Image (cartoon, rainbow, N blue to C red; front, side, top):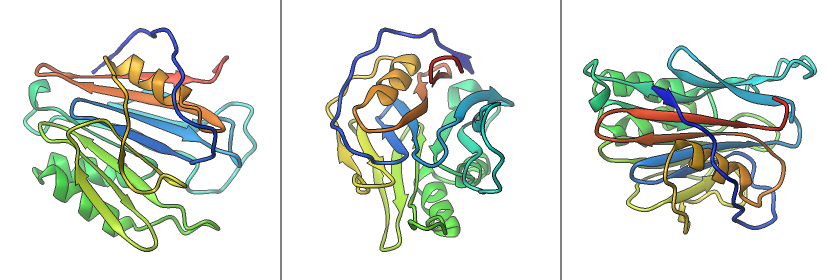
Length: 214
């Protein structure tokens, strides 16, 4: 797993609040934390995962949805060439990664984990979003009213609010760093931090984009 250098910023999108968002393409993915209630967070890399954690100046909270692994890299055969990545907005990412490691097909690992964890039991019934980047890539969401899992063949966006059904998005993502920056710079409100992931025949690369000073 390698972390890429940063690239110049470009802005896309439209002004609205969509909460957490996920971009999944056939070989590239990105995840962004957007938050009104808990803005003092960042993404760090540790133990083969990218983890959302509070910053040093964040107020203490017992909210179970604030900190979690947002990216897990899995090598089912112990070989970087077979590596996959699970991406999403909560602890269900760990469940997806564990099922991938056990040999579940990507679609099944995603669907079963979303069904098992269900939407978040907060004041907003916040959906869980997740994706798998592999030889076949998928994106999914579980809402109060539905579970949707789709194979992706073009860059696809899904978010916890407003954009809660997967939809194609006209973006070209050339690497993990560009994916992270593009997700961070989308013109949806309250960007906090972002992660990018790319998959090649040799390995998976990741990158992190945090707010200034983090």
